[in-house]
Length: 251
Length: 289
Image (cartoon, rainbow over all chains, first blue to last red; front, side, top):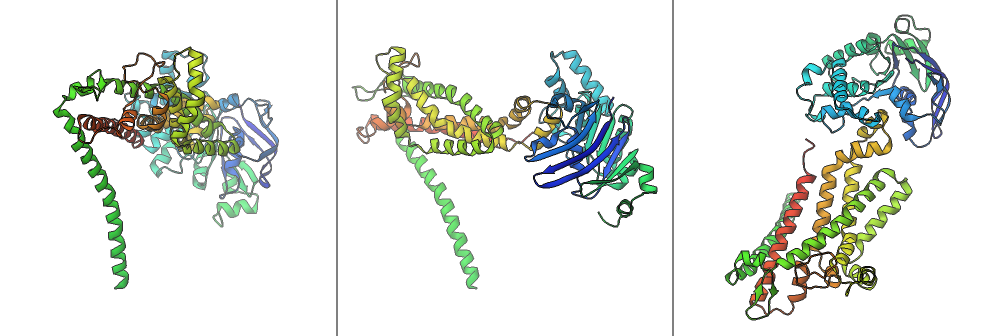
């Protein structure tokens, strides 16, 4: 099981420095929230952990991100293995235009040496159970995933991720398109998943960070201003800028 | 007051233009029907469609277009077999793999290919491809269905490539990100997510490409040999529906059986093209479930 240790991380998009000398320790089996105003670099930060930033032209990084004793910034990092270990849930639920079943077994199909039908069925059942969708969907597995509700889609995306047995779940504003009830249920799911996974969530929504996370990092203009237990950040912030943000003076 | 009148006039003008185009299509279709259906006074529809001999000027005239239909279908099938895999692969390369500069060059190249007049393609085929086919297969003549298929494949490709590329390009980026984030390689992402997501657009591209091939006249007339016999292989000369009309309309006496038969061939072609276009349209507008 892996935590993520970040040392002196810098990241540039061309000439623009999006992350400035960030250091932090994301502990395993905890939920860490990254908060901050738009454009502060929180999504960028998240996307370094599974190297999704690689697709943007002109990205340069320096520093260290240690996951399982390996610096994943290293160009030789095996991205397939990294992304299996560090999975991501996106802002807009993005199930593939395939059946519910095929969405969940996607990971198995691309990673397994040999496909075993019973094994696939097992994966579907386990994954759907872990996101509490099994009872709702067990008779509709061949339905197109795009016919589900937004909340179901997001759960399905989490199930699809869990099916590849990751260690870290990165969540990029996973509830921003959902209504309050659905958000609440996804948050419950996150607490449930925390028992087995290291979760890092980027959120715009401070109340969400306060409700769901164990640790919180506050970012501003590419810098990690403060990183502490959620309790401390929200009750006794050490930095004036953190205090101003959480009390709603800007952002 | 003046402004209102101006609005009114412009609106009406646009309306008239719009209606005119529909009006002309209807008139053309009615004319085609009127001239073409007359042939069925001489020959039954079944004998016309499935008759094995096309001797329009012998006495009595034999007006069976089965050899022509077979010729058209064979040439089209050959062209489809060549152009679909290459065209779709080219679309995948342009949409997904090529670096942005190569992409621009390739897209311009495809547009250029579409801009070559078919008579020029036919001419090039006649002086280069036809001798090759003759020598490679040791045939008495290189004017064969195969030559026609190859040249027509060039004509179908721009349509297939550009529409299939559009379809791939419009697959939401989030699907691709999702697949990559699960550890999929580029090829796995393409064939497991992108292609299924773009499948209806790619099918439409293929149908429209085939539609272009079946309606093509000039190039096939120049290089398929124009023998109205039922072909047994791609290495035989064939005559297509389109080439028959183009070659014979000039010498058919207006009002003769031959003349009516050529119009009836026009109706057959019209129905085939129409069916293909409608199918393509169905694929293009198919709701994403």
